[in-house]
Length: 120
Length: 113
Image (tube, rainbow over the protein chains, first blue to last red):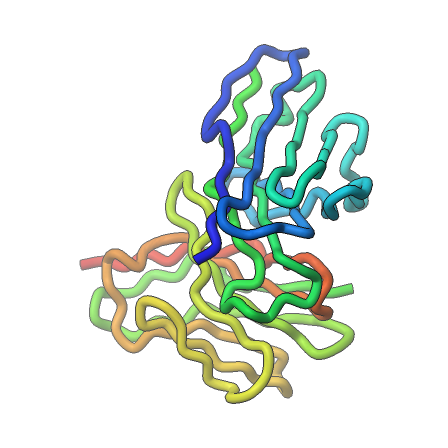
């Protein structure tokens, strides 16, 4: 099946530093990747949608200058949290999809295992 | 705009009893409906989806869900709960093939032995 990995799985950083999270589709090409943020015991909030080679589309209320998303290849997307602050601490989950109209898999969006970010 | 509602924060069930986790949705077009499960500090695991066809959808681990268009619901069910089913369950929807999944707030299922 389709596998999505994230690295790192857990990161602790000091306030003011930047953190990069990688999302990779291991055995398929992901034309579209999504980044979600999950607060403790809360739902997943869609942050942005990125298509390979294009600028990411951010959801309302998400600061594009703070959460930089790059989708430079069909297998890799990165989320960089710039000048991180304690309120950015969260569980970040990426998701990948093969094409906008993919219906070949039971699971059209494949999710990574998540990255736990803690900002001190 | 599309949205998903999971009215229960928590569902408690005794092992062996049937379970239901509720979900209602709102979309402008035909709904694509999904259920995912999440274990602590883990990503999401796909359970099942409804795109078209039979209203009763069978998925992983013995779970099933029934699509009810008139009630705009897609409740998750299992005839006999297991302690290992205890987890956080998310209902999700999208209204077009190209859009991202929008999730409900999640329902914590607790199965007691």
